Image 1: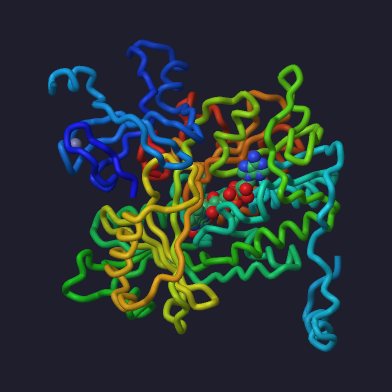
Image 2 (image 1 turned 90 degrees about the vertical axis):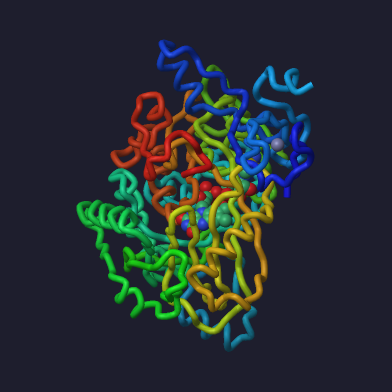
Length: 91
Length: 421
Ligand SMILES: Cc1cc2nc3c(=O)[nH]c(=O)nc-3n(C[C@H](O)[C@H](O)[C@H](O)COP(=O)(O)OP(=O)(O)OC[C@H]3O[C@@H](n4cnc5c(N)ncnc54)[C@H](O)[C@@H]3O)c2cc1C
Ligand SMILES: [Zn+2]
């Protein structure tokens, strides 16, 4: 079991979370070129090693998190709220 | 290479099994080949075999970092079928099934292909509609399929859960009679022996660590056994696709690596003589019985990007629940082993077989849950692509640029979320 330290709920089993994929993807403006949209929607770096990714604490506090996790060892690094203002607001 | 036959079995029986030769050589790498294939799974080995057999290209090496079939080929649940609903996939997999039907003879190697039939169960009217649509697509492509009623399924497999308490009652099933299973290792070994017989060098314990290029064209590979130059390079490394393509400067692809587990129980007396897919809403489960008697089954991915060939516990529970939901008689059976393979999950759930931005570098990847059944056709068409430097009619649809051009082949209509295909 991977264990993720949710900044709100503490350490929880990953089965409480839902995986949301690569968190480095940035969506372009709506009128951007097909190429830019192709990049964002379909192309992934898919690294073997450190990966920044979204996890949704679905069966917990329901916040979206950005987790740094190694895709080879599954070691979890930093975990932060995906919403940039949330950490501040909760202080 | 000595020919295997009933006579060779008898002869060796009489002389105490002392005369068998090794099935393929263990050569040192040559400095240069016409074609280097990276990855000694079923797809890489089949590609080498058909390069030699169909195109007369025999100065070929297959470079494998571990042992043959140690990747997904030797880790999968071996279901072979051609019941797809997108016409390009249907035709591709049907070609594969036809090759399977004669594969043991063609290779002179028993791949134990057993056409025991596959039942895709449905549990509600929407499931029945989907099964009917799929069966119709298959029949429109000339592939036999039938819809069975609940009674007919009961007749065929009497020990599924048909009780009042079943969480999802079985309403019927789609049957593809020509579907079945094969012995995974034998597929890798048979293609290896066949390719070696044409003069292909199979280099095990040789990892590719770099892909050499000059002026936008591939010129060879760097390996743990030194530099090997090549006029053309084909990549068939399944879950390692992202890692290996990065060596050629291709940093982003419409593929994510995920892991899928498989499970086998202790051996039982004959219990199940067909393959069963369980498609209740929210469930994903498939089961068959191996020739040794073990119940072989699997379910969903672990659902997060991973290059680790080991599975996680929540899926063990999910799969056990599914097993109990349709075959409660398995409740006291012990699980013998479970393991995981790294899956090349593509953005639309369909494979990619294509030229790449690097000249003379070809990519075969994105097989998701279903690449074992594709093995012969994958080798056949990838060899054709490499030999002729252009995709054939069946392969053209599986290009890398289909995403950008809006021509995705999304079997399940899931959209660009690899883990859901
Ligand atoms: C648990 C599980 C169940 C499955 N069930 C089914 C099923 O029932 N039916 C079905 O049709 N499909 C199934 N599949 C999918 C199927 O197994 C694969 O799609 C198929 O076997 C892939 O074959 P391949 O030759 O492309 O890859 P692999 O067999 O994985 O071969 C790739 C090879 O490349 C090698 N390699 C990687 N990097 C390098 C490098 N740098 N240098 C040299 N070599 C390298 C690896 O060691 C590996 O041997 C399943 C997969 C899994 C994991
Ligand atoms: Zn939480």
